[in-house]
Length: 264
Ligand code: NAD
Image 1 (cartoon, rainbow, N blue to C red):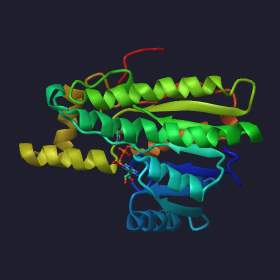
Image 2 (image 1 turned 120 degrees about the vertical axis):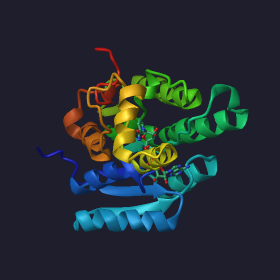
Image 3 (image 1 turned 135 degrees about the vertical axis):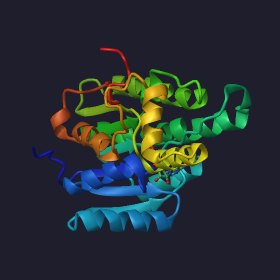
């Protein structure tokens, strides 16, 4: 299937690793001119090398900017005046008991996971509306629908993304611009792999055993009963980025391995 992404420009935040990198790599493979983003030049250059190794024709460049701050978003905006596709992917998580989460952590997760997408959408959406084509995608989470008791602050940010995404979609009425959210389930990204490896070491079991245990006790409703790969998530994102998804707008689409036990 030709996703018709040739000639489209795309910006993916937090894309030097994990789900963001997989999205950037797939969009580049499909012919989009991709800008990746991370906080350090070194990680960006590594990610660009990785993408070019897999797809020698890839049109890919990168901008180092910390999107958790207004200044970081301004830096991105100053470098890229217009994009066809914006993927608000950058996001952080950290398990912490509710009573131990200080105000500063609530704010840090909100700034990184929510305000980054707000600031960039506020700049790029009007330009998409003007050219009457565009895609904004928020990488939310199954945690938006099933707030994780071990990190309620993270769940709050992921639910907030759904509200913003649907609200922005309302502003696109009658145009060829769409705004959607993608809800991955547990995915073996760099961040999650490091977390699982740390837990496995602590319990003196293998990472495979830890994964089995995590799904048995932590995510028993998962139908996949394993971590999804970042590439499996990227496949859905690439479709939503494509002109082929023109009738999908204002949606919250799950690629969660069936972990959310709901048919709506
Ligand atoms: P990851 O930790 O593997 O990678 C995150 C990337 O974002 C890295 O490239 C990192 O350098 C970059 N980044 C982090 N903070 C940044 C900042 N302030 N400015 C610029 N770049 C920054 O993450 P992941 O697991 O691939 O998660 C990506 C998104 O997917 C997040 O929004 C996360 O909430 C969501 N998600 C992940 C999972 C999962 O299980 N991995 C599940 C559901 C949703």
